[in-house]
Image 1 (cartoon, rainbow, N blue to C red):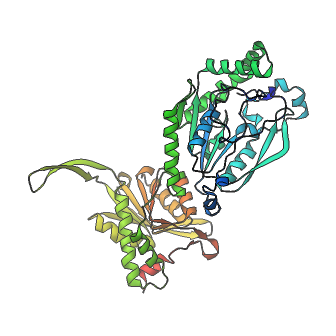
Image 2: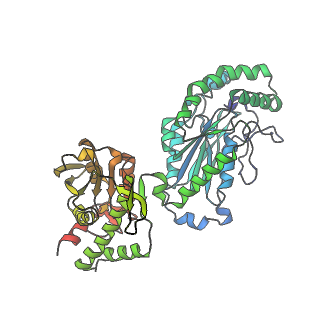
Image 3: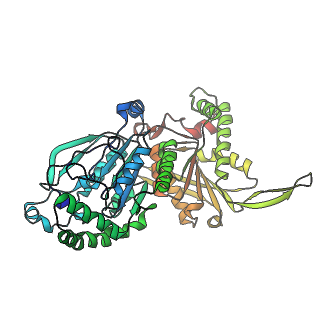
Length: 483
């Protein structure tokens, strides 16, 4: 880990990656004051106008959080800087775990050379979690500035605004479960132990006036044991492990940046929940949504266009089912290599609105078995009033249908019923026409292996109107079945 308790002098001024090019966090050359850039780094693009306007209007439920971890002097800062520079067209904020050290007590300051700055207890974890949560919600935050000369926080704080991407960097980012679970992508920068120690010795001897024996003693007493206990085991939680022994791995960086760009092009909730699928919109789909959402639309027109949307969603859902390869002979006598539908499929509708999607499923899958579930919602409780499911449902893929997903409470209860009947989570597809962000979050986070497919995402649910979707389409069941 960086030699936090040996840092003297005034705190370093944070810099942006635009001002300084990529450099290694411990293997790079020091500046004129002998400092290395390990501190919190912040970067926003609003000053250039490249996204400042949309930043005011953007929904922030899709903020993409990246956690970067690795041993001391492994190259974490270089990786973060390089990623940030490649994402120059997006608003990016970088946080360092260093900024969230807790203030030492008087007794700890008196014996600071014996304080273990490499242990998770040295950090103010609640403040770090609160800061990440606010950024994830698209709210501005005040990031503390830690004074390493006094081992306490200075009065200076820095206000950081909302961003598309948040990169949090530190040796224990992946070792802290709560922080790790907030990250959408987890990266571990892997560098040989001997190389990291050599970098540390070179840095401390050349820049901080320390002797080799003292550096090795500190490394042996604190840094290496904590690396073995916390940092190295956290490698197993990483989505990507980047070998960084030679100082750069541009192939890995390019792959990571392209993945992030792909995520940023997706609907914001899709960035966070890979089990969410939104049918690509076009004027035809938007036109049908306009008709079914219009309060003046007749029942005949509502049913007609609702059936069309139901059919599109069902067809899209079928595309996520397993297929088997099959070869046939065409009328011309030529062979054609294609696929065949996998067997063992059934549908389950959530009464009563879900029954409006049954006709579309039957039109696509001749003779398919369809079960039913009725969930009664009473205040905070959801009681199952009725269920009739195929006896062999545990052996089938299940398409669970409800055209409107609001809070997600009913959907979660229905999915849990299917799981209780032995249906594996990854064999459940939840099909809906319109979904609210609240329902998507509840379903996708509760059941990460359930595929949720919708044609459009609404703004929110209104608790004052019995949790109706906004803008919504009214009471779907009444408009579909009642005259």
